[in-house]
Length: 229
Image 1: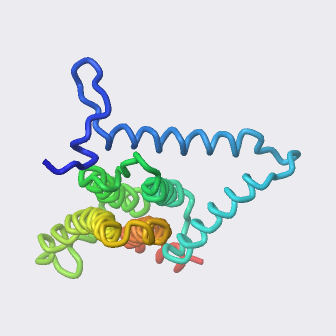
Image 2: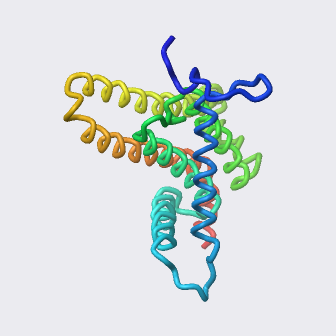
C-alpha cells in the first residue's frame, strides 16, 4: 500500500489512530497560534515595533492589499478567513522540505476540507452582505431556468479548489522523487528551493480564488453602497 499522510499512523489514543495528516495539522495550528501570540503579546502603541512585529505587519498588509484589489469593499472579515487559509497552506507547503514532515496539503482529505470551508463560507459572506433573499436571488440570474446550473457551478468551485491544490502538491512530490532518483547529489537543494516557491504560489492561488468567490457573492452589496455615495 502506498504511504500517504492519511495512511501513516503516528500514534494511537484509546484505540483511535492518529495519522500523519491530523498530527501535522495540529502541529501547524499550534505553530501559527504560538508565533502569532509571541509577535503580538507586546502589541501596544507605547512599545516600538521589533523586526518580527514589522514582518508580521508587512505580511498582513500585503494580504489586505490583495483582498482590497479584488473585493473593492470591506476587507476585515475576508482578511481573517483568506489570510488564515494562506498562512496555513503556505506553512504546510514550506515545512514539507523538512525531513520526516508530511504536509497535510498532500492529503486529499485536507484539501477537500479546505475547499469545503471555502464552499460554506461563500454563502455565509453573501448572506451577511446581501441578506438571505438577495443572495438566493443571485441563483435565479439571469433567469430562473439557470437555477440548477448556478447550483452546479457553485459546487464545482469547491471540487476544483480541492483537486487543484492536491494535484499540484502531489505532482510536485512525484517530480522531486524522479529527479532525486536520477541525480541524488545535485537536485536536492535545487528541488527544495523549487518546492518552497511552488508551495508559496499554491497557497497564494488558493487564497486568491477563495477571495474571488467571496467577492462574487458580495458584489451586489458593494455596488449598492457605491451607488448611494
